[in-house]
Length: 205
Image (cartoon, rainbow, N blue to C red; front, side, top):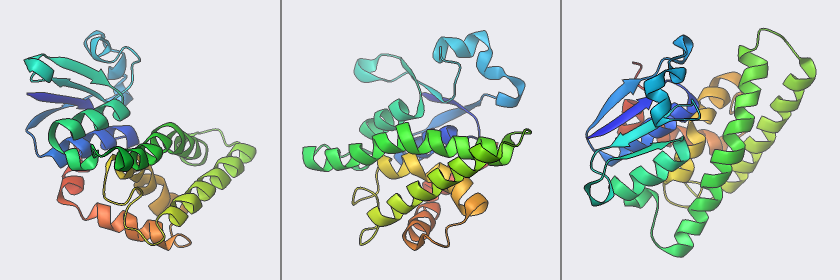
């Protein structure tokens, strides 16, 4: 059985999308960040960095129980386990996926989170930081828009690369900053939003 310990954040939605795309049965274990549940002793055994998401699979490799934390490791693990089309074995195609998957995980999301913090969540307004991170997000959306020119998804076919970027575009791009100047991103976003697995993953809990 798969247990997904998560909350309704960008990284949390990434992991839930990946699990939903496999079609495998799982149990959702909410970790309420507002109540600081990520610092609880039991959760820290799963995620020593006190961050969601974390995943436990009692039917891991060789039948072992495995535990992992972080959306990146969960995306690659779940794709290999139940949705290999999201992380192709062909080395050339995998390199294309890796390029955008690692960028989405290590660059796009952290910087988009800073935009969200300074422009939406922070009670203290810092105009210089707001201006900076808005410019950064616009630049990154422009980069994605260019990559999607002439192709449906970031690495050709729908993959974990798209899942790694979608939640922050859905959260910060659609409502906060708008996608009017990025028609390819808007088309890409809407195609992903229409996927049944994505709709299930974004159900509130």
